[in-house]
Image 1 (cartoon, rainbow, N blue to C red):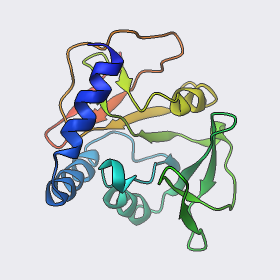
Image 2 (image 1 turned 45 degrees about the vertical axis):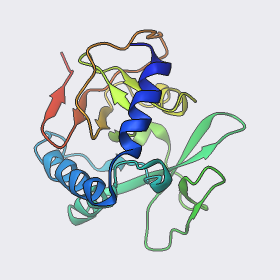
Image 3 (image 1 turned 60 degrees about the vertical axis):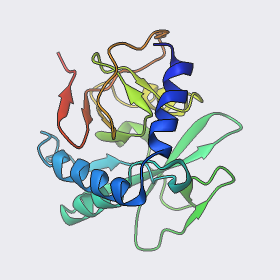
Image 4 (image 1 turned 120 degrees about the vertical axis):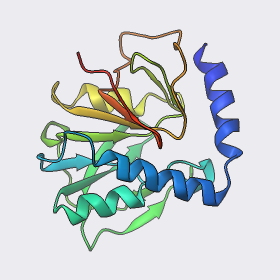
Length: 189
């Protein structure tokens, strides 16, 4: 399938989920993530959910990270440059929604991308080779290109993979894992 078709299909599928389904599936994804071999690292990057887009509720995963005393880093997008800045999440962090309803830190302690070790990535869909489809702005591919090569890239999805995403570009960075409510898909060789 082409990316535009996949975006349309999976946006519709997500919009069809009830609030209860989103909460239940998000909790299952968070619990399943405990099976990942990634809990010995220190710096974890995680997105804050856009409720209006019916994204996976990452609050459950945030609680796990904080409960394990991990350094949690959250993104702030710069739509002028197409880049993301990363800020340490602390008790003093003020979160506000930007004009696209993305919850973001106002400011704080900026963490360079090369310090990050694990990143949880939002997506609309993924395929059996670990390629993903997001909203199409390229924020995460640009961000991941600035991270160290060994960073562990974990997608979170309500749905199972599609067979194959067409239109894969050299700038598209594949996932190492994707966690769904039912299972973990591994793409590392």
